[in-house]
Image (cartoon, rainbow, N blue to C red; front, side, top):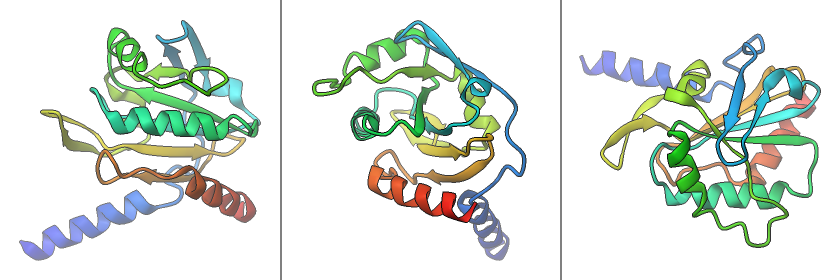
Length: 179
């Protein structure tokens, strides 16, 4: 049984580390933002690189810090659209976003809602991470090229394991060079 478990874990790690799990672009989707009363559709972003940041459900101080750091770092770049998504209710997202330190930012980042983590499931973000008494999806970022095809992804092992903005920029440059 240990051999089977090891094989399954190895297979899972290969799947998580695969630079392109989607050979074809994902189906079009729409995300609504309870923080800005707006929505965005993936097809509207054609021609742009899109980074989808899957944030944890519930109150997560690392998610607040991560979102703020990415929003601040990305202000100077127009070539990537960052979508921050949470699977919470609209009211929970508004309450969470009220704790987001937007001091020094041109504008507060838009937080989108992923009802029942359907988008996370579509992108095969693994769940089962135990956090604040709940089982949630792992924190992740999935980056799509200008045609919607996956360039790369990073799935954290816990709530504090996130791809730094500098590492994001390096991986983006590398993947765009190889594409």
